[in-house]
Image (cartoon, rainbow, N blue to C red; front, top):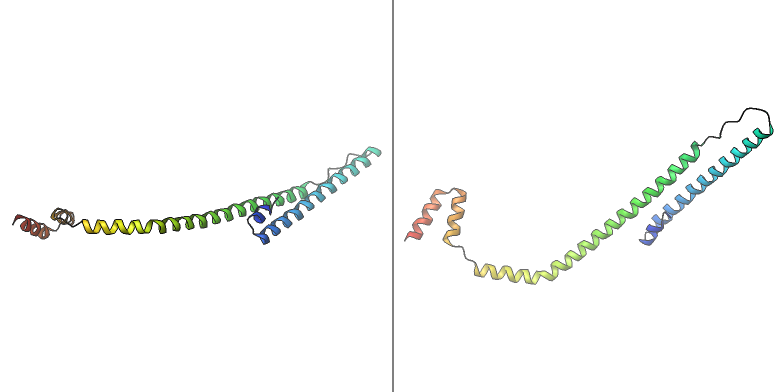
Length: 148
């Protein structure tokens, strides 16, 4: 039933809107179908009692339009529920990620502090960066410093 998903998500205005709209369109569809059936049997009973030609079938178009409208409401309702679910999942995922990062923060700070204390740049690192940047004067300076 359209609107039930919104009500389950505690979105009452959207649930009432979709539910009422679908019920109204379905009642209109059922009314059109009943009128069509009565018109068909009325015409057939007149034809059976008379000698004339068979009457044309009542138009079926209004029923199809109302059926299409009801189906459209149903599909839009499903899309609305799914998109609201995705938004809720995104909020939940962000909350879980923030909690995880907060719990990992002390360990990350400790690892970064320890690595900055134990890691000193060596001449090899400086030489590697100088070679990558193609800085000939820096390369010559590093070789001269290490050679002495």
